[in-house]
Amino acid sequence: MNPATPGPHQRPDNLWSSRTAFILAAIGSAVGLGNIWKFPYITGENGGGAFVLVYLACIAVVGVPVLIAEVTIGRRGARSPVASMRSLTDADGTRRGWRIIGWNGIVGAFFLLSFYSVIGGWSILYIFKTAAGLFSGADADAVAGIFGAMLASPWSLLIWHSVFMALVILIVGRGIRAGMEKAINMLMPLLFLLLVVMVAYAATTGHFGRAVSFMFSPDFSKLSTESMLIALGHAAFTLSIGIGVMMSYGSYLPQHVNIARTAITIALMDTLVALLAGLAIFPLVFANGLEPGSGPGLIFVTLPLAFGHMTGGTVFGTVFFALLLIAALTSAISLLEPVTEWLEEHKGISRGKSALTGGLGIWAAGIGTVLSFNAWKDFFPLGFIPIFEGKTVFDLLDFLVSNVMLPVGGLAIALFAGWAIKRDGLDQAIGLKGPLYTAFMFVLRFLTPAGIAVVFLYNLV
Ligand code: TRP
Image (cartoon, rainbow, N blue to C red):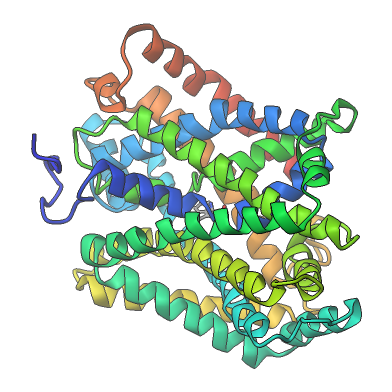
């Protein structure tokens, strides 16, 4: 069989060359900043093993079904999210309102990448800072001072944001095979290698046992209703669903690939990386008597402090930030893809120019995030509205994308694929038969939308 059978609208020279190529690209998208700093921390704080169980249930009930639905829609439409939704609603005679899914994708990916890239830039800068030995022997104040000084300098943030975006544009601009696949085939094996190296280092030099018990010993008393909502929200973010990224990636997927099996593989690998990231980070944190604090502080303050006091810390600290950069980069290219694909189709400009145009727009939008940490630190554009009180431009974008566009998009995708899309050959496209398919459709039609709706409403109030 031709490994890359195209669908009616797919160009044979512009498809992932194999199932593995698609899986690696999708794992690259899924594995990002979310896995490396967020998952380990929320796991520890919400009951360890108990939380992991809830998280796995959320992956199964919301993550995997929406991932399957999104890739299926993408492959059927075989165009950018906007054009795919238009073509599917036209062909099936369904309501035009569903097209919002496509637009939500392009706009969401645009804004998410605008701030994701700024943080990606931090990881480049930290590779250099760590390699230069800036943290070696430094005390807590010095390390926090370095982080603070970086945030206080708009120029330094802007430069590294620009470098990061330039890399993303270069990779995406070369196209699916020559650009993305080539980069991913190199970066993903490297990512796994560096991760294993980091876990081995942490296991031999850190407090591995404490990390394991922090992350895994089930403490059901810490598992609140809120923990369950956190698990559900994170399950959606970490699998890159809701804003057209997986739809775009699916539009280059050969017809013979079994989507259900592929989606499960992606979800399992993403979870494995998140668990390993925790086992690479916490042993070092505990070995230095530090707090497993939340947010960027864990990665950019606590960890450098830990590395600064360990043998081999300079080398392994550098390795760690290289790992973070790779994770962020392969997620970022997936975010530029829907925007590029859309420009390519709608404006009829070449792939390279589309990536450049989209990328420059995103770069410019990112300046809002750059300034949120310094000149606009006290600028709260929508501060007069109670839920936006005290939110900077960066906080607003993050809130809008993570808490509104992702859940609304995920909900709409589940409903569209569950209720509205034409059913002919859907089971075959997804790759499920008989009772399995029936069970899957039941989850997609009822449980998935209900789960997302609850989290969405909760996050708003
Ligand atoms: N999944 C990535 C992470 O965990 C982030 C990401 C990349 C993403 N592309 C996305 C999230 C699309 C939602 C939608 O860091």
